[in-house]
Image 1 (cartoon, rainbow, N blue to C red):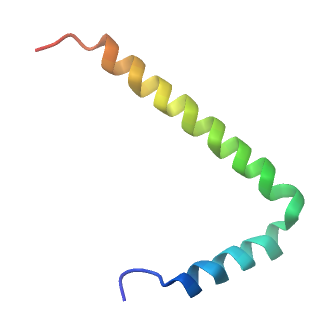
Image 2 (cartoon, rainbow, N blue to C red; image 1 turned 45 degrees about the vertical axis):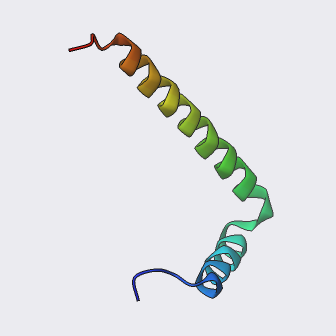
Amino acid sequence: MGSMSPWHWALVIVVLMVLFGSTRLPAAERGLGQSLRIFTSEVKAMQRDDPPS
């Protein structure tokens, strides 16, 4: 009951495609990818700036 089966994931993807359409999904994915890249670069910068203890 805890995890979703492949059928559930397929249904979620189909619902997202119907709700947002094929024009808005690529833009949302692009924005999510860009946000993830910024987040990872900031985390790496923070790790470089921390002095070793």
